[in-house]
Amino acid sequence: MPVRRSLGTHRRFASLQLRAVAGHEVPVAVGLRARLLGLALLDRAEAGSGLLIPRCAAVHTFGMRFSLDLYFLGADGEILTVRHAVPPRRFVSDRRAATVLELPA
Image (cartoon, rainbow, N blue to C red):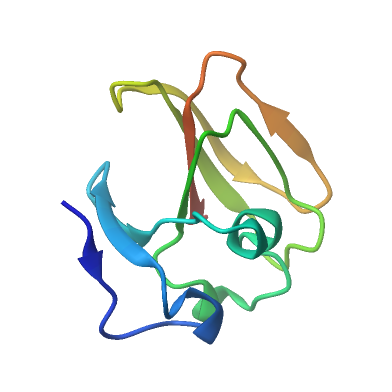
């Protein structure tokens, strides 16, 4: 069940709900701005625990200042693919995915 964020990392995520996924409690990117920007342009400390992007099967790391661990999740939340330490300026996808979990590497 989603919960409201009480302590934030970056103000960009202050209004987003949190969800526990794969052992991490992360904000859920539901709006256009949160989905488009993701963790881009943030320092690693500002990125916090990461970001969950629903209805997503592909992400880019353009504008990233650190590497990401990407978890591509199926419709039931099962982990389909994990890509560790994806560096900036990459495009990564899994056509089967329904959601992507972005975590600082």
